[in-house]
Length: 290
Image 1 (cartoon, helix red, strand yellow):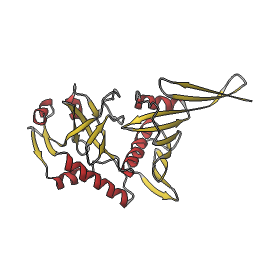
Image 2 (tube, rainbow, N blue to C red):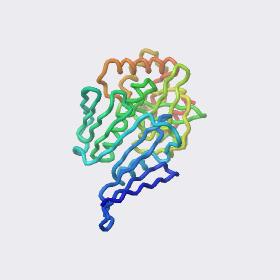
Image 3 (cartoon, rainbow, N blue to C red):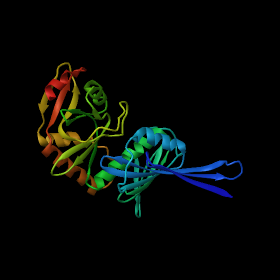
């Protein structure tokens, strides 16, 4: 005989489904569901262990969704693969599904990314797999881009700091404090013909989000270069577009979706000025921006 107990925690919008054998009430299965806001999209997660719930709580709290329809459903399973080895992700399409495979994670998704299963090795694999899936979703639906950058708020406007690995994105974020940060690694940018908006990103590397920052209009993008002297140079729009192409978190596999990225970037550079920022490792570079 098996006993099933369903308990809902309204404050966190978590539904736990606990299953025990009736002999000593030994738990053999733990499952649960949770709805979480990322940007202005609601994602429903189905997890099978307390460890997965703890990781979701740490990454996304307090972004629990209240009475909003889920745009994407993600099931999470663990004990897959090996620890992180490199960033190489293999893509394949079979029938009505797409697959992204790395040594430490596997994503199985519908073609429109509205329903997916993620198999992960550990917490780092889950974070990277979710970034992969979320970026694929927002590009496919022409919603926006996930950009490799940090972002800080000044006078209710967002300012992005992008660059190649080691250019100083996390450094710029730390030097921007006590300004509120919307990201320190991956910036969520919603792009429309009317406005460009940055949302608080849960995909962090060092500086954790409070989860309470409000979305802000994007005032400018800075392409970072470390230097001995601060200077700011506005870029031509074609050069800005080319410079931003490799800053987008995306695992290219479909020419049509690559065209969507290009279209979104064209809107972005038309609406928002892009600069090359040469900066010293101190907060004085903000004098050039503000």
